[in-house]
Image (cartoon, rainbow, N blue to C red; front, side, top):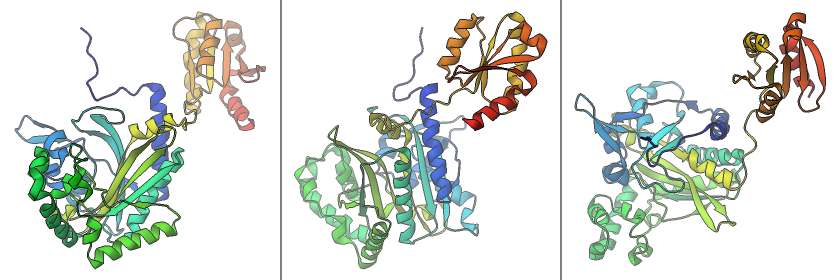
Length: 425
């Protein structure tokens, strides 16, 4: 009986893996430029972390988490997002005590959500994200947004659309919450069960409902921007001014609501406008959070971050044919003639690899012609041909696969000679 891959997951095959490495190299490079350091957290955490951190009223906690009991009866959840684990680590390891603040962190790894698999949405997905924790300066908001934009542009995407909004501080959100309750209450029975349950607890989630997005009350719902207090207005205006100073165009969408309960003030999404396909695809989103660190036992400081799907990024890059040829060619392929040469080839390969060259040979007993075909398939820059005569003389025939030129080289000088040729190319 065949055992197949689970729905909502995927195998990343070698050719695809090269693309993943390409974009993750870009992610690490942009993190270095912005002075963000890597943090790694476990794939599973205590379920309470996400209940308290992400919010009981969110779809993630209510419907999408992979939660199970371990052998000690503890409730464990495969992480559905990256911010709460990073904040948990920040608090538990007392990173707020480090002299360098705000703490700038980036993470990458698999996340898990039990939701309906569709194009660009998996049950196991790989996420790259950043968190800047410990500063209330709106300049760090603008920096995080700029970092996300720079990352996508470095990967080869243009036609990016940045959408921003402000969810306000606690006071502003409270005023807006009451206005939403008054707005939706008279006709809440026309909404789905989830929206009815959220009316008193978190009516902001109603604006993000996929089932009731066409309901006429959605269009006339009170906008958060009308309920911002003076401090929140100044904060949002400063973020806008900083983005303009960095020549980053944006649009304001008062209906932009992030799907997690911990967001306050700045929220944003980056979309890819594709005129060819007539669609706007959301690539990433993020925002500022206030109270999350304190809720998890830490000091009263805030943070801001974003998380993006590598799968969705690769889909966009492939759709636009924006990925370069990222499969790395082989430096040298060793062609062996005869059993003795095939056996001695192992030592030669190891010597080449010790010198930093990528090298391979045949392991299926193929004829010489078939070995050259294999070298071509691997895009080998050079082939090194050895037989019994070459071994006896301590020589190897080196062929440049791009020019066809050949020369005899002492085996001991093979690696050094290939490196010299590579410098000259």
